[in-house]
Image (cartoon, protein in one colour):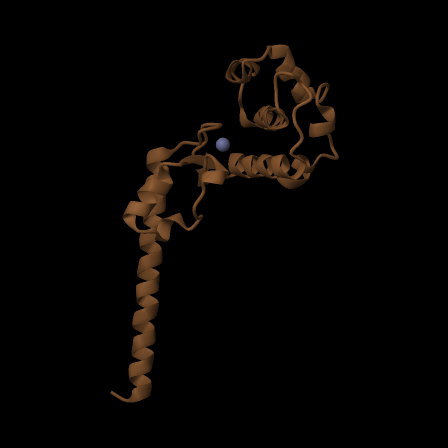
Length: 164
Ligand SMILES: [Zn+2]
């Protein structure tokens, strides 16, 4: 075998290994999503993604290429969310960092209001949202309609911009 042949054979092997590894990582990811799905927020099984429940606890987003031990520890801090809910959550998270304002209401924080607002399009009922946040159902309706906290959820808000 000539030097050039050997080199191309090495490259092909390398390519094969990489592809094999990618497929394996993909399979691991899909298995986890299947076991941990459907979406924790809306119950959808479409386009599931791995979400770090608490962003500040995140070590790395390259969770699938970690060693088994590290991966298990990392995945304990995660939940399955569909693409839609994940994008919304990220937008909410971003918003919370950029403004960092304390809540104007004595019951809810800005982040919670945005969470409630985002749930409007997630197939949640007013009752279930009210129960989850321990608030009156009328408050949920007001937030969803932009009557209270409208400055936060209105057309100029960053959340809308990010979620679109
Ligand atoms: Zn969802």
